Length: 227
Image 1 (cartoon, rainbow, N blue to C red):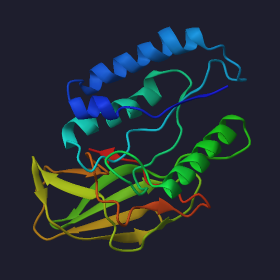
Image 2 (image 1 turned 90 degrees about the horizontal axis):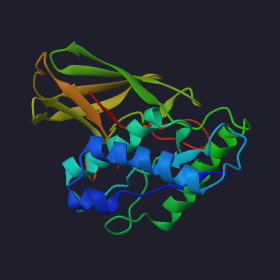
Image 3 (image 1 turned 30 degrees about the horizontal axis):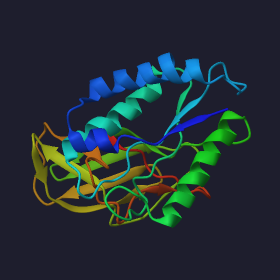
């Protein structure tokens, strides 16, 4: 009734497939192979294809890992009946590309929530998302987030996973903390240029020692973002 896809490690390791190439190949796999070979046993218009994006890779390369993960997130919009099964980036790794046992349990529960959502038995299945980035002052950037199932988030301070850049140069972050229930404030050590960018959970092995999660029972993570 559902197909769950949790792949991409080999393509990320080789680094020979671009974001666009991977997305296109994934579209062909779903539409021209999987959905032709597997009868749709669900009540959805097409066989639902659920994606768990690429896990953290402690020995991976930022660029190629990001290509694959971004392509998988792109496919949520370009493939009909394609859904985010669950995110794993906030969960503990055990080895180069596998998760710790407890992490797989959490991932399974999150995926089950997605299936309940598709069955109309749950009100949400995705965590918060970044909706806006605002330069509040020379050294302050605010990140606005939209909640889905929750109404607030943790932690209140020492948030990890964000990066602020001027061009390709990373700007040192002095602090990242909760401003209110839908805003994270990033304070920089130096002045931020007018032309800057922000990203969250970027690359092969982002810092998720203190990640953003919502206040639902599932504690779903803030989704990756790059501006």
